[in-house]
Each structure stands twice: as C-alpha cells, then as structure tokens.
Image 1 (cartoon, protein in one colour):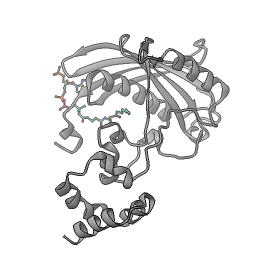
Image 2 (cartoon, protein in one colour):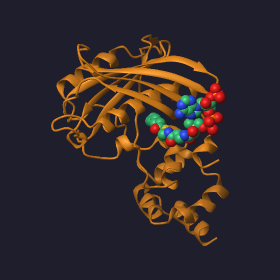
Image 3 (cartoon, rainbow, N blue to C red):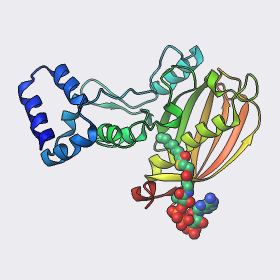
Image 4 (cartoon, rainbow, N blue to C red):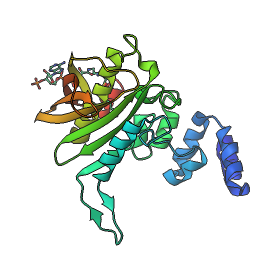
Length: 253
Ligand SMILES: CCCCCCCC(=O)SCCNC(=O)CCNC(=O)[C@H](O)C(C)(C)COP(=O)(O)OP(=O)(O)OC[C@H]1O[C@@H](n2cnc3c(N)ncnc32)[C@H](O)[C@@H]1OP(=O)(O)O
C-alpha cells in the first residue's frame, strides 16, 4: 500500500523523466512487483526503470579489419528496407545479441531485471570490448543455416597463444543452439560431438558455419564447421543434438 501510494505520487508529481527514473531506481524491485501487477504497467513504462539493452553483436573498436570486412559482407546480404517500404531480398538477417537471453522475449527487459538480476549470458559477461567472445550471428532462414563470425579475445587462452577448447565448445554450442532455437523454438543441448582439427590462434577471426541436418519429433540435429576466415583451414567440426522443451523445464518443471 505504502509502495503503491509512493509510486503514484512519484509518477504524478515528478515531471522530469530522469528524476522520476532515479527515484524509482531506489525502490527494491520486489516491493514494486505488487504495484506493477495491480496497475498492469505497459512495457513502454519500463524505460523509466532501465536503460535500453546494449546489442553486443554490433561492430566496436576492438573488431579487427577482418572481423569488420566479414560483418560488412554478410550485412550486405541482409534483407533491408528500401525507400517506399519495399524490402531488398537477401535471405540473410543479423541476430541481435544481449547479455541475457531473456531480453529477446517481449517484455524481457523488465523480466531480466527481476529474475536473478545478476545472471549474464556466459558469452556476453564482460563489458571489456575484445577481451573474450566477440561474435555476430547471421541467419539464413530459407537455407536453414547460420554463420557466426567469431573473434577470440585474450581471456580465452588455453594452450599458449591459442584458444581454449572449452571456449571453442562454447561458441559452437552458441552457434548450433542459436540455429536449433531459431528453427525449433526453445531447446536445450543434449549432445555435442567435437573434433578439434587445428588450433585457433588468439585474436584471429574464424567462421562457424552451421546447418540443419534433420528434425525428428523433439530432436533437432545440427552440425558445423569452424574454419579460418578465408575458409582455407578447418579448425574444428561438430555435431549437436538439441531437444525441444517446455519453458517450465528451465525452472525445474
Ligand atoms: C542464444 C544463446 C544460445 C545458447 C544455447 C546454449 C544451449 C545450452 O547450453 S543448454 C545447457 C546445456 N544443456 C543442458 O543442461 C541440458 C540438460 N539435459 C536435460 O535437461 C534433459 O536431458 C533434456 C532436456 C536434454 C532431455 O530431457 P527430456 O525432455 O526429458 O527428453 P527425453 O524424453 O529424455 O529425450 C527425448 C528424446 O531425446 C533423446 N535424447 C535425450 N538426450 C539425449 C542424448 N544426450 N543423446 C542422444 N539422445 C538423447 C531421447 O533418447 C529421446 O529420444 P526418443 O524420443 O527417440 O525416445
């Protein structure tokens, strides 16, 4: 009751948006919940409580010339809105990437604030640009294929000067999981098989080219090859099995 009256007072009496936002930030989220649900607050009101999420898959100063060249190449293949509202067909689309998967969902921005607030997507858990996983995924829906451009930062070292096998497995799981999820909805990794063929030098840029092999009921089978950016060297190849799940499974259901 007290929170409710306080929130209403803030929203009605404080007109300056930054000040309203600052005051509301001071209230614990748990205290806000009953008031928000009673008031059916629309998502558009949430910017008061949080800044827009950063899309980590856009170019930043840490990206090498090769990373940028590949980004621009795949970006040029993407469907674009032209003058007059027509779409330039391309077949490809860039997927945005946030530091929490919840932010993809409608209203995810606020859910993300409320649910295990400190949780972060493993691959996006540092703000230091270029230090760990720099990557962007381009999806081709009609070919049931995606390409991930990946630049490995210095925090991913395994053997001296080269990328850790677990970090390679992570970016493979992410690429295959993104494709499987795009095609089949909510999935979890059941099986990954990885052959490490040649080391990936730290700081280099590689391509992870993933394709759908088949779907059998709840099972989505995908595979990928990790190659040097010019495709001349095979670094890694992998297959993955992803199982479609109900959302409840994520919460122990
Ligand atoms: C944007 C970022 C994208 C990132 C993507 C990252 C994805 C992840 O890392 S997910 C995290 C890692 N994965 C996990 O923690 C999953 C843990 N495992 C589980 O939760 C469950 O075992 C789960 C969901 C995979 C399957 O359980 P359940 O829903 O009960 O399915 P279940 O009935 O056992 O099996 C369904 C089918 O799959 C098969 N199957 C299940 N697991 C396997 C396996 N490991 N190998 C082969 N087949 C399997 C079963 O045999 C069954 O086949 P059929 O229908 O022919 O009889």
